[in-house]
Image 1 (cartoon, rainbow, N blue to C red):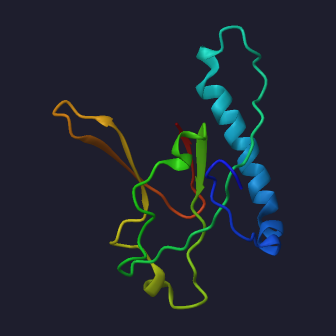
Image 2 (image 1 turned 90 degrees about the vertical axis):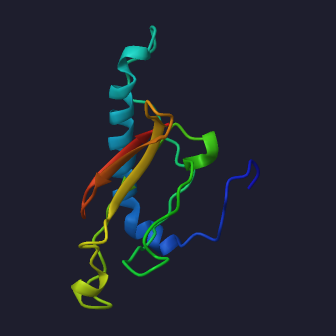
Length: 138
């Protein structure tokens, strides 16, 4: 694809299995985004914005070294208005729950948003658990 948007051969079967979740995420994000920007409309419609998905991916993190996180990055490198993160259940089938558990190892989202009074990056940590959803505004 042009425009520097990463692309791969999609897993159509997985997309089909996740389609209801993706559609729900679109609706929830659109409503959240509308509410967040309600005061900035300057005469624009109060209708729900249209959501266009640029990328969808599923990642699996474990407490194992090198598998704990998606490293610090900018979502869409300025090409997106927001992002949705859904915490899916941990894998309880490939190993006992304590093997795949993040208990004591974190698990959650970290944001670097702005600077502190001393000029250091402002770090915001959000504890997330299975079923949680996070909406991120650019």
